[in-house]
Image (tube, rainbow, N blue to C red; front, side, top):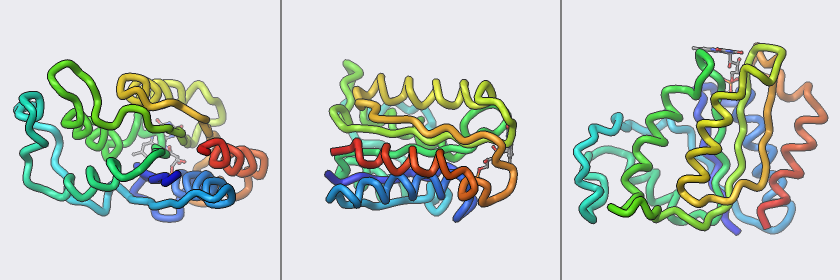
Length: 182
Ligand SMILES: Cc1cc2nc3c(=O)[nH]c(=O)nc-3n(C[C@H](O)[C@H](O)[C@H](O)COP(=O)(O)O)c2cc1C
């Protein structure tokens, strides 16, 4: 099992990153291999809806998306992590998901189907209600692409960069989520 962590926050070592890492630690503890990307490290443009991908071609935008796509295709599992920005996923995560449209054929069959997936959402507010929309957006993305969701890690009250480290129960749950990837 090879699992790719996809961090939708631009904050290296921030809350989303910490929880994605903890899931990946769980993957490693049960014998899996891991990789991780920060979407913001890549120069990727938003989808321009040219629809070339729908007629059997790959995404025709010439940018660093293709480096990300290769890593996704190689992985058996994906961990998608986003902070809540204005009640939704981060712009980085939204662009990532839109560019994944290029994995669909004209019957909406996804080239990335049959993988496993886990979701991380973090927010500053104290209530999980603030994470509901972001969680739903990524759940819908995974369901549409026929990615089986093994677990979700939802962090609230995370205003400071490393608040996730203090949430010991959540860190333990993240680790256990990683172990479910087998
Ligand atoms: C641009 C921006 C918008 C935000 N919007 C919200 C929001 O709508 N609701 C909320 O609870 N927290 C919001 N936050 C706080 C972050 O979701 C929270 O601190 C999160 O844990 C940051 O994750 P990170 O440490 O991985 O970057 C926002 C933060 C930023 C920078």
